[in-house]
Image 1 (spheres, rainbow, N blue to C red):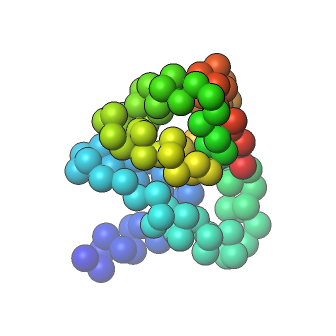
Image 2 (cartoon, helix red, strand yellow):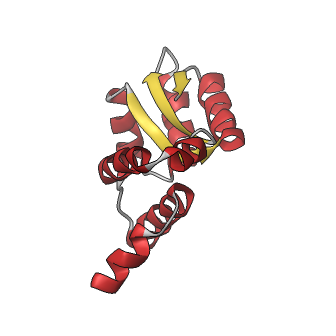
Length: 123
């Protein structure tokens, strides 16, 4: 266990994001809250992680809008969720859809959700 923690401590923010994504896919869980907690201390160490974070974005659903069904369908596609889970995300807006994604992917997600009628913000 100690070896695993030491390896994780040496990872960059991007590597941690990829690790979390792989664990979520492997075990069918969501780590959105721990990911936010893990990202906060990394920025405090020195300025190089802060520069790295600028290349990654968080996509936040601000509002599902009037076309809620279309937004739920888009969320299912983007997040790989079932119908009930995607509806829960849409109902809980403002809600983070994806964290730690590249600018191009974040803009693509934003475009899909806005085309479905949602209000989205990139952070």
